[in-house]
Amino acid sequence: MTLTKRDLVVRIGEDMGLNQADVYGVVHKTLHHITTTLAKGDRVELREFGVFEVVIRKPRTGRNPKKPDNDVLIPARATVKFKAGKVMKAGVLKLTPMQSKKSA
Image 1 (cartoon, helix red, strand yellow):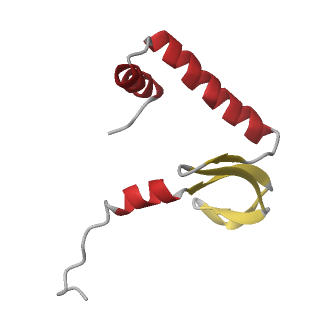
Image 2 (cartoon, one colour):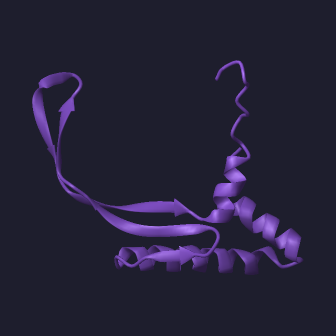
C-alpha cells in the first residue's frame, strides 16, 4: 500500500477533527518548506523521524547495456539523502522476518 499526500490529509483530518482543506494547506506548506530548504543546500532534521540532506554525487563512467564498448560520462549531480531516525528505524525493523534456527 502507498500513502499519498491525499491519504495523509484525510488521516490527519480524521485524527485531529480538522477541516481537510486546512490540513491540506499545512501539509502542502510543510513539504514546500522542506523542498526550498533542501534546494538551498541546507539540511532538514525532523527529530525521531529522520534527516534529509543534499549530497553531491561524484562524476563517474557508465556503460550503455546495448553498446557496452561505449563509455558514457555521468556528470556530478546533487541528490537528496535521507537517514531514518530512531523511531522510524525501530518501526521498520519490526518488519524483519525472524530467522529460524535451521537456516543459521
